[in-house]
Image (cartoon, rainbow, N blue to C red; front, side, top):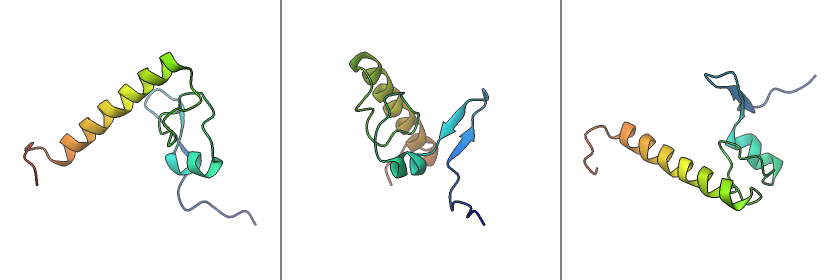
Length: 76
C-alpha cells in the first residue's frame, strides 16, 4: 500500500501550472535551477539574471504576506 504524504507535494495555481511545495523541494535536497516558486535554496543553480528576478519576486511576496497578516500596518 502506498502511503499518502502528510503534506501535498504540489498544487495547481490559478493558471493551471503545477507548483511544487517547499516541503517537496526540501525533500528533493537541491536547487534544480528552474526557478521554482517555493525554492528553499534561494535559486542557487539559476542563472544570475533570472536568479535576481526570482529573489525580488520572493521578497515582494513576503512583504505582501506580512501586510495581509497585519492589515493595520502597525507593528505588533
